[in-house]
Amino acid sequence: MKSARSLIATLIACACVIAPATASARTYTAGAEATFAPFESLNQKREVVGFDADIIAAIGKKTGLDIKMVNTPWEGLFMSLNNGDIDIAASAITITPDRQKTMDFSQPYFEAQQLIVVPTGSKITSMADLKGKKIGVQTGTTGDIVAQDTFGKTSPDIRRYESITLAVQELRDGGLQAVIGDNAVVKNYLKNNPGAKFKLVDDKGFKKEYYGIAVRKGNKQLLDQINKGLGAIKADGTYQSIYNKYFGK
Image 1: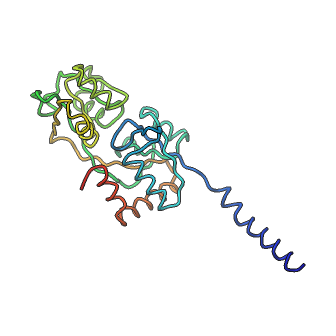
Image 2: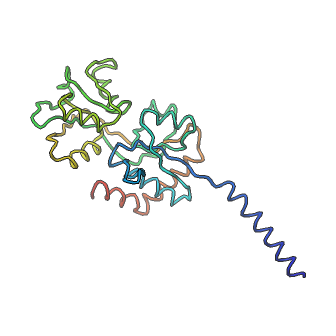
Image 3: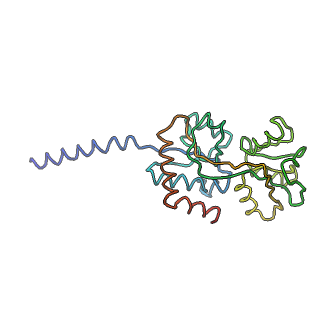
């Protein structure tokens, strides 16, 4: 009888320990605009895949965070983060002073820069040559910012698109004379579309950019976990392995 009571007491004690942990467990949502390959795109199952998705999965594995990637339109990504619809924004987001005013960023995890995409026969060799030309950019990206800084925020020559893929398609159709976009993305497009007859122009004035993983302003606990995981995957070679998978050695 005594042993039975002891067993019951032990089971109750275990239940008390397990219950709070289960109640406190949660799934974090990470938004990504899945038209930005190789960083994020949708597979046949409509799942978000790509470099950022692999990085987030690796961080989750290292820290024990349960993180689910969700496809989120770029134009609504930051609003979704600030409204609490998503917990994390992981979508090849360049860290800029303006963005740091409204969200907090992890340590940088990818170095990028802008490139100009033009038809192979184009004589454009720099940003200066784009004056008076029809330029395509993805709305709200650093390509858009670079174009605005060079030609003015209200320039009628800057044409904005929901995705860089749509902008490049318009260039392919002859509706634009150039597209400005992130180097890894436009290089990936050219690699996968060898018949597009484009070339890349590197203006020496383009500055290096650094991507960061964003959380809501003041969410230090989650940011610390992300930075911890990011540091761990860089230290043990996981990050390099993922990088090599998408960009080569």
